[in-house]
Length: 158
Image 1 (cartoon, rainbow, N blue to C red):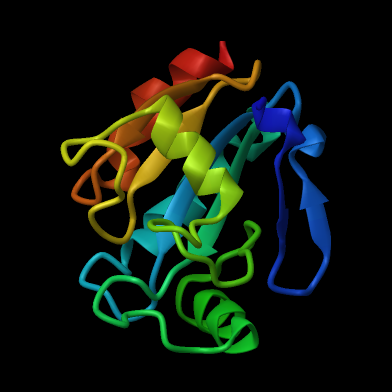
Image 2 (image 1 turned 30 degrees about the vertical axis):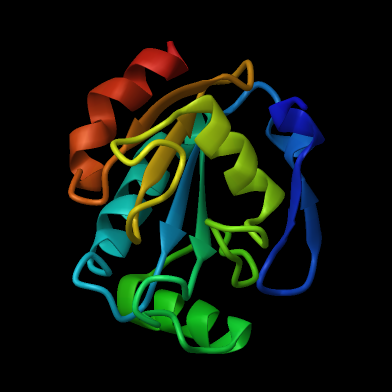
């Protein structure tokens, strides 16, 4: 499987093929609205605003697998992100990131970039950076702040 064969359904119901991201760097993040890391949405939006014109896409993947910290509907999640953090980058339908029902995007990402616990995502706001050729360059822990990704993003955008 190749990164560009993947797709997601956005919170507005539209299917988005990753083929549309060919030639761009992509930061993929599993998110939650009621998590201690939720304020990272602000930093993710700042990265999107800073680097989007240079070829960075950011995609948020809401997930309720960690202590039920994303209980809302797709519409509620989108509204929460827009109202509280001014999020303009795409937010997908709520997905699972671990287990037998894990979304194919996260099956792919976790196989390509293992973390401390092997393939499993251990918490909300785990981040994956994909380069413009579709290679998973790096996996970042939930504790890694979005602003600390700038150098890595700039490297893949060159």
